[in-house]
Image (cartoon, rainbow, N blue to C red):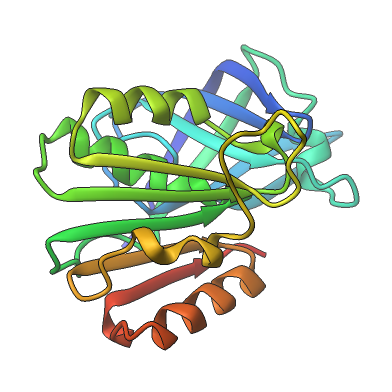
Length: 232
C-alpha cells in the first residue's frame, strides 16, 4: 500500500522560544491521522532533499492544515535549513505514522507527562479530546528548565479555565525569582496523579521517560497503564 503524500505550503511560522518554532502548513488535500501520530517532513535546500519525522501538534479535526512544533538543532542538517523557510515556501509531507495514540486507553483519567517539544503529541491529544467534549479527566504535567521554554503555556491555561475536566501543571527546574509556580522535575510532581485510576502517557528525552516510568512503578502504578514515546 502506497504511503500517502501531500504538498504543504507554510502559511504561519511563529517563534515560541529562542530555539523552538511553530509551523503551520496548508495541505493540497485532506489528511486523516490519529492524535499522537507523526509525519515525515521533506524540504529542499541547496538542491538537496532533506527529511525528518515530527509529531503532529494539531487536532485531527483540522483536515487540511497541519501544525508542527520543532526545536532547532544547530549541529544538525535539517532544522537549520527548515528554520530559514518563510511563509509561502513549500514542503512535502508523508504519513501519518506511529502507534503512540489513545487507542489503548482504558482508565477513567488520562495523565500526560512531557518536557520540551515532547509536548507536541499531547497538544494534539488534548485538543482532540476537548473538541469531542470528552468527559475524561485530563491532567497535563509539563516541565522545562526555564520559564521561557514552557511552550503553549497561555493556550493550556486558557483551556484549563474553559474546561473543568482539564488540569494544567507547568513546572520549571531552573526557575528565576519571578517564578511562582511548581518547581523541580516532572517526576517530583506526581502527587497530582491518581495512581490506580489513571492511564499515563510520557513523551520527552529518554532519560526523563525512564526516570518518570521508574517513579510511577515505585508508586504502585501497573506497567500496563504507562505508555511512552522517546524524543532523541
